[in-house]
Length: 155
Ligand SMILES: [Zn+2]
Image (cartoon, rainbow, N blue to C red; front, side, top):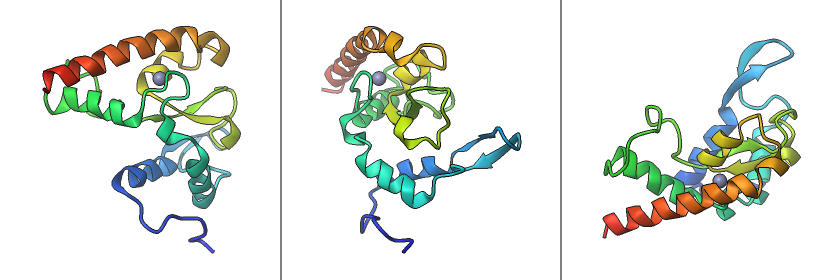
């Protein structure tokens, strides 16, 4: 039954997303760094992923994974922009976002996809209502301009 619900073949992007399941985090109960979710199985995570709206992009500004990767490549490959990827660790793809940061990652209802720029700006400080749509709108506007700028330079 372990294979239940899994697509026949995962593409590279999906494989990378699945790596997020193994992300390290602090288990507050034991105060130890653990790998993966605590109360969510890999299969449950896959089921969640399929319904998560990943293809729609950031839950706040709508920036897609494709745009995120394009901006990442403009820093790491074509060097069009200053490299702010922190050693190529950030911006490559959409990130897991807890809409309410007081709830654990294990609460799949609270989990969504956010672009690096929204996730970073919202942090654990702004509430969803404070952040969206005012700040997220401004982020979207600038990210769209940067995206167009990269397209123009790559022509
Ligand atoms: Zn965003």
